[in-house]
Image 1: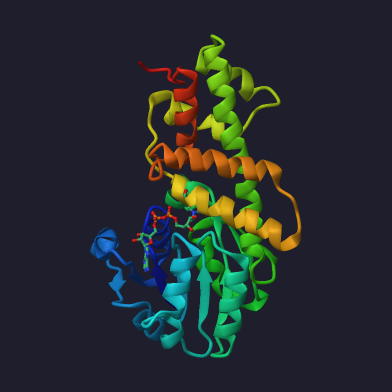
Image 2: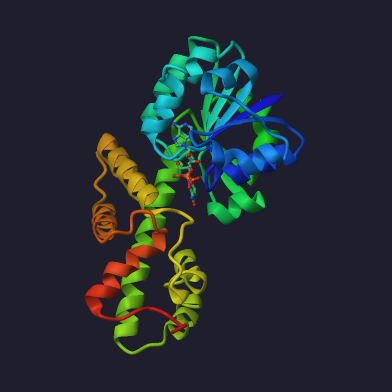
Length: 296
Ligand code: NAD
């Protein structure tokens, strides 16, 4: 099996390395060649375009920032569609639009190519450790063929349903986790303003009904003033837009989701678009005149 990997950024570089370390013949491509340098040094091959990659490989994986970029990689002048051969399999592992993935699957099927959507959860740390959860939509036989390669990147591969369902599951997860991220930020700013030490507050919450994954990250992020990504505000904003779009498509109102979108817009307007998602707390801290830090 010759595997190609497109997009070796925060997530993809670790995911591709895990595939290579599992013994697969790996070819990589990224719009920024420097991003690929560490993997090329470790023995990965380079493809000049997605089309070249599709001609050389029979399974292609991608981890790209936005639906627009996935669309360009597939349909562009030197896109995958120009190089794909009958029997090839494509798994897009980006957080992406379910309807775009259904369209790509339809167009690829005309060339005998099977498309799966396989977005991931677990963050950069999970990508590095090979412990991601991978939510797959699409043909079960194709999944069986690539399952071992996916398991090189994750500890759990779940088939959710037809193509697009992987992303629907991922968007539901991110709708929930981004809401928790925003409300945790509000709660901690309020708590500190009311005179509570942030570590004491975290200890209390961690054994109470407010327990959550986002606040548990604070000792490595907010408490020490580290807002480097991780999961960028720009990507969180993309995800909440996709989740709200899915709500509209199915006629499901998402009022808390709307509030999260506003929170992310305020964070972007304050200049933090490339910071990690914990940076939603920064405009709230400014408005309240406090900082949620344990180190001064
Ligand atoms: P990133 O911006 O760090 O990496 C994306 C990579 O794609 C970069 O190396 C970039 O150069 C490359 N790229 C951009 N345009 C390209 C093009 N036209 N052709 C080829 N390569 C191109 O993003 P990331 O944080 O690694 O996220 C990737 C995907 O995974 C996103 O869809 C994101 O929503 C999802 N995701 C991210 C996290 C996280 O914690 N970072 C967690 C789960 C899911």
